[in-house]
Amino acid sequence: DGGITQSPKYLFRKEGQNVTLSCEQNLNHDAMYWYRQDPGQGLRLIYYSQIVNDFQKGDIAEGYSVSREKKESFPLTVTSAQKNPTAFYLCASSRGQTSNQPQHFGDGTRLSIL
Amino acid sequence: AQTVTQSQPEMSVQEAETVTLSCTYDTSESDYYLFWYKQPPSRQMILVIRQEAYKQQNATENRFSVNFQKAAKSFSLKISDSQLGDAAMYFCAYRSTNAGKSTFGDGTTLTVKP
Image (cartoon, rainbow over all chains, first blue to last red; front, side, top):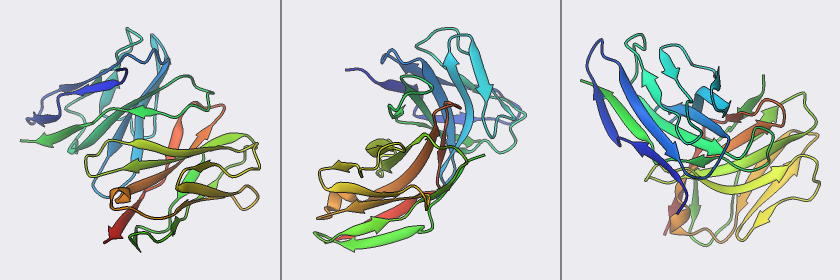
């Protein structure tokens, strides 16, 4: 079945450490997105990519970095510059930037500070 | 920038009854897409229903329907014959046809009472 796979499900970060969250999709979608969700709140866009080798900052990009070397993959790195990284991270994809198709979401990664 | 407002942080409904969740948005665009997503306790985001702004007819998906008032910039979700499985957090989302990214509201937590 096609879908989005996020790993790991739970991740712990030490002070000063960079960690990378994986997101892979086999839906042949062009666009991919990373969101951050804090308890009881909505989704805030971190980065998005509409095509391979291109990506744009979202509303809260500081302290995060991404790459899009393959259509299927859009990993998110939480750097040591992100001082409050504890949150639930959701990866999503969609068919195209102007499509009326909805976003498909992964199951999320919960990141905590040790 | 577009904003999406869900004014009801929490709602409750009796099983088999009807409930309406509110969503308003702010935009200067004339063409866009609107979505309602459901996030159950498992945390996976699932599409409930979508609406194209150029369509006057309100979208319907089984027990879920919307009341789309373009001039008022309102997009409410009506759930009929509520079921225990409808309990979740519901997010309203706006998607521009130009920007390729979505803006989410802060969500409404729906409780279904047996």
